[in-house]
Image (cartoon, rainbow, N blue to C red; front, top):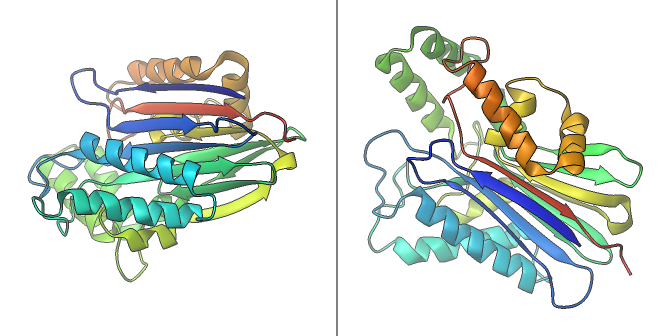
Length: 282
């Protein structure tokens, strides 16, 4: 079994809101991984006294523990139970109904002798390298499919840069996040039922050679700066490790600090990469 990971804050002066962890059993050929990307709320009240780093640490720890210890539970059931646990831990002190309550994107995977299971919620990504060398992206694309009027507000905010236009765009996006009518996109927050909205599936263990989980701060390499496709990204990490991928993103960000050539919400973002190469099945 081989695991490599890196997580780096976008701003050294701010807490890293990403989370990455992996677990291996004491015996056997199984394992699990979890990668979360905390959603940074706009400046102002979010109804919680703890904050996003607190939330992602507790959700990530609970989710990894359940995935690793309860093979009888689906990944979606593990996420639902973990959200319920974390909510119970601060519902007495915090307003969990607040639209900006701490939340996160989720990537989770579990492998054993027979299957490799996966779960993705929101815009973090999971790449599966097959034994044929193909790279299969597992993506929840709903955040990239915003309605035309919201995309127009985004373009306007990027063009003008005014606080008023940015605030208008943020409000439009918040109205779509975890919308009960299914018209928007979903993140893991306080409602455990959101786990049912996750992208889930599985592959035969013998068909998967390696897994690569990334937050959107790392997938900027492909999505924002267009330095290659998914297969190129996977090859870079397999050949050189996770650190050069993040270094390439930082270099591209620094070359376009104001987002003129490559528009983006922030100059730098927290970036996390986790590569797992399971041992050959028995």
